[in-house]
Length: 96
Image (cartoon, rainbow, N blue to C red):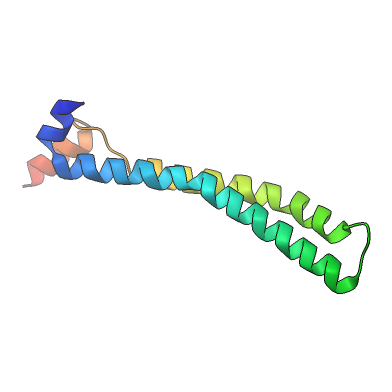
């Protein structure tokens, strides 16, 4: 791990930043769920429903969206992480 920092500190910093961004997928999940919860509660209050049907429906509908958002964020950020000594490094070094 130490030699990765010494060999290319910019790449190491980028990789650490991308790992941090990938960890934000969990926060996005919670944010979407809370948005669905509060929107459902507001709709239930607005339409005066006593069985909270809007809250239940919005929470059930938001679960697939949270899973898709989490997968997209993680795949997008982790696809940009590169290991030192990867073929991309050799191509960059050869091109100047």
